[in-house]
Length: 350
Image (tube, rainbow, N blue to C red; front, side, top):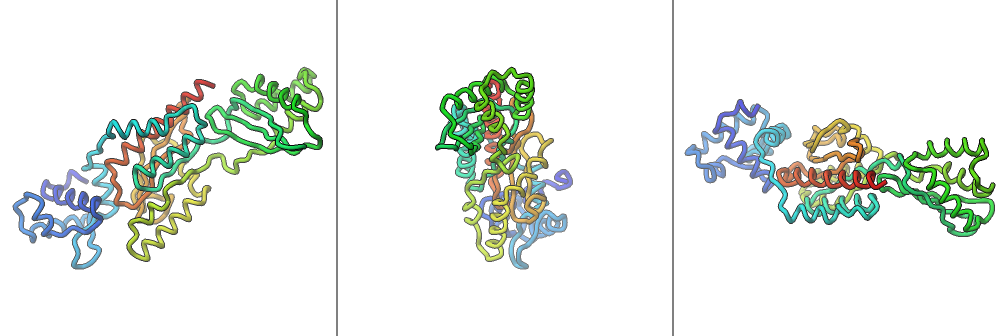
């Protein structure tokens, strides 16, 4: 549709959107005539604005006010007129230093990533963490207290699962060490289910070389239910940013609705499936976003992949439609690439 606009309409439309993204205020014809070298009268500019409004790209919040871009107008601007900037070397270095520490568990990296993105963008950040399932890198049995054992599982992606096991008798330290050593020798990148199957076969064939107590410990440790209630989980940071530009009671209510929605993890898990075949940064403007089912908000989100090039999570920001798109888009894109690289390194090391 952008090709259907003449040069005058395009310049006026671009100026209105740029002004809206900068100030959030409606733009009138006199303001445009003072700032654009078009040699047009305010009346001529008003006629062009009326044409843009009729095309569904602008609207007037009040009868005597200037114009603001519609959601359709913002989409047209982002897809056809906006020039996406690049990150400065300092911003790249900051993202890499915050997110690029592969010595930390991936869960810690993702927590830091969410906090960093929220701070840099002045928006709420959203991180969909990888599934906790999959191959196991290491397992350890630790005595907590009499008849209570902590089972620590480190997954290949770096996520850590802790499971508590109650026992009928106090387990000696030697049995805990034997169980840990046995499983770490058998795991070799296998999933829990695959390891259980292997163990069952060795028990059946009497080849485990474990005493009865240690054998039971291993079986029970593998069979414990996961501590995660969802296959993936959501990290949301900087929710307070969503309330900063609220000026009216109606806007406050919309912000509260969104905050409540973000707290419901299951609501957001459908997000990953909606971008499962996506490449690169995805931008949802207002009511385009079926996830929130309400206008007034935008989301910029990018999936990230593991070492096998499979999409396992996503990173993004959520804020009012008046976002600094040209700055946030490359920020989200670069951050998702860094996290994907870390996941790939963890798998390679495993």
